[in-house]
Length: 248
Image 1 (cartoon, rainbow, N blue to C red):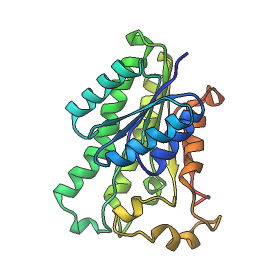
Image 2: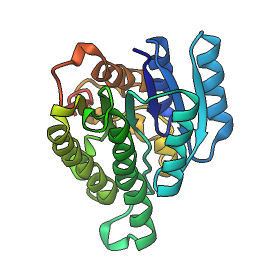
Image 3: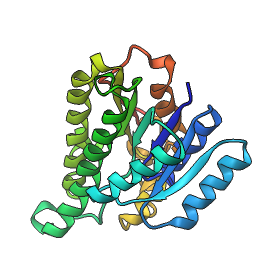
Image 4: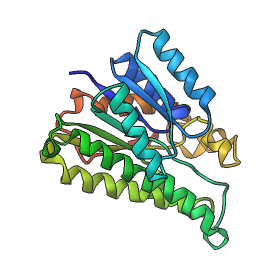
């Protein structure tokens, strides 16, 4: 069966590592990005250079019309979707709850939560046996922040990831008899540029002492867990929340 994977936020960090690894395993990969077309195009070039199939597609997953257009392009160019990695997500600068703005909250929840729901909805319409599909897999990228809470820094971000955990467990049960498995990975301190986008480029290194394994993880290590959950190696696993966090 031709495997077609959409990775949202696939131009950098965990998304990029997942796109590369999945392509190595034979998936045709749609690399979604919001702004950085150069990074997305470079990902596609790397995948094609390795003999894989990929395309870059711009879309803001927090905007329904753009999500619909994204899936239509995949339908037309790559064929029926068989896997989705809901990776697109944003964080903001450290802030207490009594300092946050409505604009900040809407941005985080629109991208991190609404975007994951919209993409999952469109994936299910294509993959579910209830809708004539052949089945498939969804992996949501959550965070250990969902259980740690993010106090004094980003309770709002942590709350979006708590929503993703609940979403994963509920959706897994909802579509378990329709050929679709739904799981989540919860990364801990991973050395990617998401920390810089939150105004703390040194955050991964600074928090290493809090990690029992005494090191930050790599995007590739998270990608390995994601791709395994997509694979037949996890054929009886659904509704799982898999921590990739050095036991933090």
